[in-house]
Length: 227
Image (tube, rainbow, N blue to C red):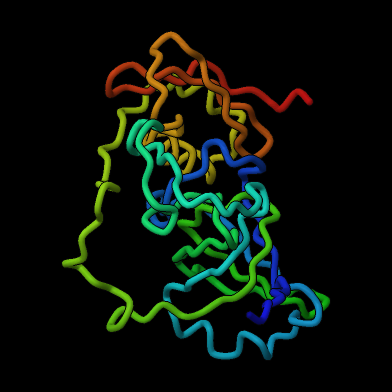
């Protein structure tokens, strides 16, 4: 069988350098900002001519922090990390071909001084510096299926986020809403539920520490990255 070689057309830039803390699906944290920066030889505005006519885009990208795997089954965190399902019945990052698919909202198009196009998007679930293989317009008349079933991946409720506002003073104001939104979707692995444990998440240039008890997430510290 023929092997296909994929070339990144762009790189995704955002405030999450690590996987931990990222929304589990695109669109959940609609305030989370990101940028799609095109790479040569695809860094000509001609490649995106007409893209500003769409409100949403599909991004095809690489799980570059996971690696590929031929294991037929995985343990989704949604099922507590103990139940196995087929890899093709899940969205696990460990796959025969480590490719992700995300729908993002197109906020605006920027052309840098050197002519490189940049797409400012929102609602992504990609880590910083993720390679992007392809970009396609989202078509609501063809891509939306409101009656579709979601299997075991039922939509979870959001947590109540409690945070002393003085802790957030160091975080730029335009980034605070996205941070709270991400925390409300519970960044912890689905199989961890230790109310005494302090978790730490990297966001922009900050380390955010928090605890979760029942339906409440309490931020215990927000500090500048120390390393």
